[in-house]
Image 1 (cartoon, rainbow, N blue to C red):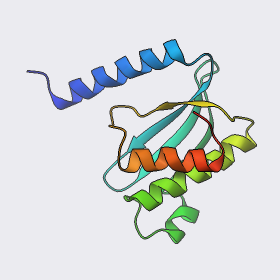
Image 2: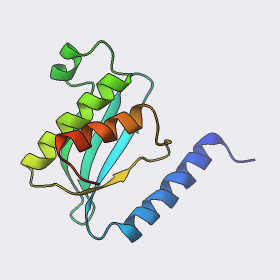
Image 3: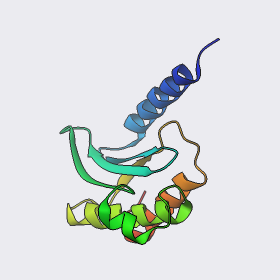
Image 4: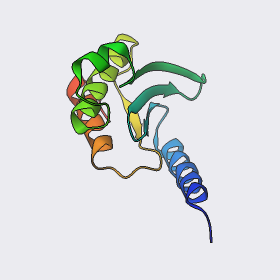
Length: 120
């Protein structure tokens, strides 16, 4: 039987392959969620560069949040990431949720990014 890490790695590879097929050359909004924080990056895979990033470990985010591990924090990270991505000239992205299901904090981050002006 495969371990949980093996299953997550397979899911991540499968999802990234599907994203590459359907992306149409758009940049990728990648999400990582831990038990205490949430992180997001806008990545240009063609150039291999991170165009914008935001997370709950940043000093400005920590000051205004009760905790880094709730939906309010994820929404704030999504809005901040959208601001930074738009400043970098990105308005359309492909959402890469990684091995995480699209609910809870991941969905809140996506909704915050949409409110901030990103479309996906």
